[in-house]
Length: 141
Image 1 (tube, rainbow, N blue to C red):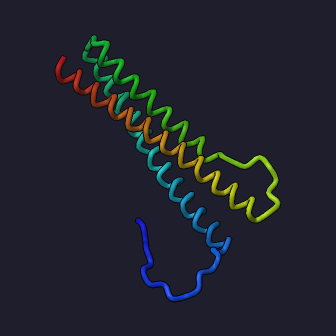
Image 2 (cartoon, rainbow, N blue to C red):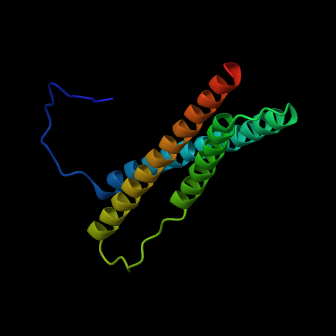
Image 3 (cartoon, rainbow, N blue to C red):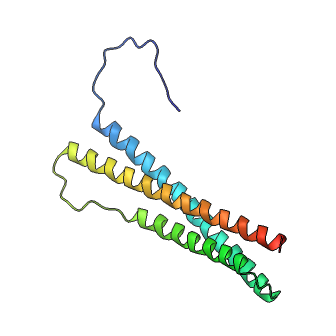
């Protein structure tokens, strides 16, 4: 949400570094929360997809398209989990000596986590699409 101040009567001043760090850390916390939700959904959907695979194998449904769609879903969910977990282990590899460098590194970590979270959500959506395609093949076999 964009906030715009229309009539600001005080003198403009520089943003305090503590405010920047606090804002970035809150955004990183939000990224981690969304990443945990995506990881949980991927785990639940992996279980559901495996149940669908076992059910179709039990009913002796020999449709290669159905199996392929479900296995692509499982693979996408595994990638979702792996990328989500990998985003939590990002660290800087150099010594931080100044406050500006600290803020820059913190922003860099935040943006990398955000990119990985977006990639993880993309694989989650791909897995869900695979499930829908598999269910479509199951219904219209």
